[in-house]
Length: 110
Length: 122
Image (cartoon, rainbow over all chains, first blue to last red; front, side, top):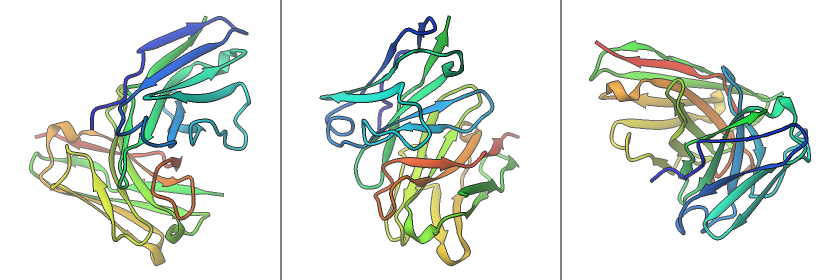
């Protein structure tokens, strides 16, 4: 049950695109198409942004997209906006009702 | 509207016990796997436990296995987390969350409550 590996921080200017990686193993990210991404602002509960690797819940801007290759998933935020500044966490199903989260990535909009 | 409200947190001494509750509304609890996640203030998210729709299957993180017990009461729309043998490192904000997919395996926490704070200290 080791945490998924995410970069501690990423940054970009308004309008640019940034990608956040999430590396797991063949027992979690690589085994299931159940990778989700969460946005968390200070003092708030996490908000689901991407599920099943690539799907967006209703209401999430299409500037947010997900992908996966092997044991690594990625969240891409295109057309950065100031409101995107937050902490982002990836999460993967790891079998038999178990989950594993990444350590979190601080996205800074310059 | 989906709503989850955690309660039961507080200050407890090491070795003590607490029972967290999660009251849900806006959806039928019996249709969704449910998950507890905790977060030390200023730190990352830490999966604790997930329970199946009927409650007959559950999983736990290694760090809490044997000390914490997840359960549910579907008719009462309540989820619980019994926490025993508490340690200082269990100090955190505890969230409950429902699965995104009805009748799923708890693969995607969807809506989250605002959390209840547990502090383990003498």
